[in-house]
Image 1 (cartoon, helix red, strand yellow):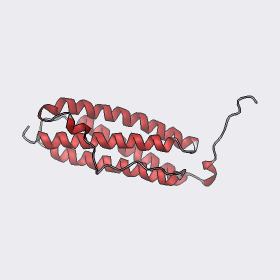
Image 2 (tube, helix red, strand yellow):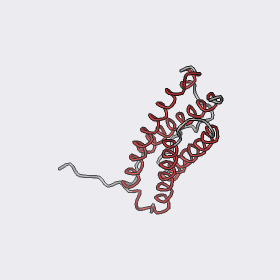
Image 3 (cartoon, one colour):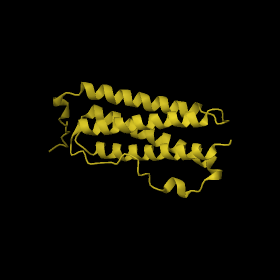
Image 4 (cartoon, one colour):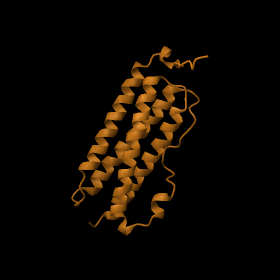
Length: 158
């Protein structure tokens, strides 16, 4: 494969975006959010953790021409995690934007890997899963009603 370095760099970029999404999801789940949203975000967090691990494994398989420092160097273009101060819509928008950014980067990776001997089926599954999660969050944000923002607390027998 003659264009391995750009492919590896794209894998690194996607790995960093998955890391950014993990951090964004953690911040969002610390907010007072509806139970349905917390369920979707926790599912997304688990899926993104698996996808990030698989991207790291792909990196390990391809890194013959790269140094490990390439993956640990910060990516200044990555979406920064910001405090959403309890604004559920803002949190959802940030998460959906990172999802879309990851999908775009997968598309760029597919273009780079075109004609290579790299098996893209796993990566296509990643992209499909990200698209599904994005659709789920977008649909959920449309149906969230103001009364859904109330937290349901369970009494501990006082």
